[in-house]
Image 1 (spheres, rainbow, N blue to C red):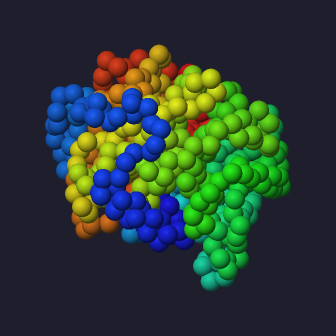
Image 2 (cartoon, rainbow, N blue to C red):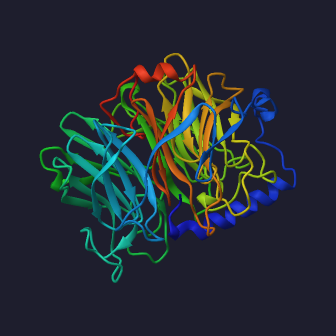
Length: 462
């Protein structure tokens, strides 16, 4: 979801794009015939079966647990955000701070602690004993007791979570325009963190123009309190764009392949990260016809494909309806051929949502099925979708989990949906943490794959 500081600009851009789309505008010039979505299959097998409490699922998915929001994270503005995993623990960001859950029994997760540390976004990642939070709105200072009286700081907060019941704040790094999301690139005893943030904001103390860059933070594992920005590479040397929307939304790194894919406000970028401090641009993609906000990227396991997602409307609009073309607010599947990305097809859920249900492609991850390309993904109030893109030109949905419209109407639904050690975990903005289980011949081989940890922006092979 985009930050409040750019939501107005995005809403205007999104409405203009929707208006053009509904008028029957053409798709991006030069698309291959295989990107025609008329062949897309999206119906999950077995139809729908009610699962109680307004929940609807395909018959191969069931909800096995839910942890509702509780104080101090149960206010209207305390929305749940991203997830990370390590061993028997799940870490969940929230605009009010972060929570740690014991998931040693996935069907009976238990809250270990909730740390009050307000900050817009608060996307979370975990590496060894360090937890990192992204803060994307200025506050008075880096500590958790900062307020909004003199907004002069935004960026990364760092915690030591060696004791899961008692996390300890150890430091912070201020970054230009804050940190909307961040991506870890480990290098021995040094952890590099790529910071993605939207901007600029004219007359802002923390986000002045120009903002044509990402930022790279160096965190020494032995002295995380001395973390600092070590590089600000400009990865848009040839970019032409709207000055209201600059910077990147999300970067996914695949360190063992020495690749990263950056989803930025107007572009998708393929990067060589052999030198993590000096990423090199391999290819820029621009699709102003079909994509509004290049939101996130996912490599397949062998790094021969990249899925880019479009967050049309910034996560606050109902774009899963019959009036929005299937190539917008969707996923675009690219094959990596001879070092270059080539568009093959699109995927978007076909379950039409109501006009007060915010719905668009959002955070997801691979389900580790050897030899196949399968992904689970959050769609806000469109719920959780499991889809197969092994055939890049004909992706299809194979399962789903969905709640009815939130009452009263508000921004709601699944922010992130990730697969970890046999189960799907969904961070629901208003409902808490959902645990789902999928029983399907296609995905069942993934249950044999065990991960020690999982941060979606830092991919590892399986």
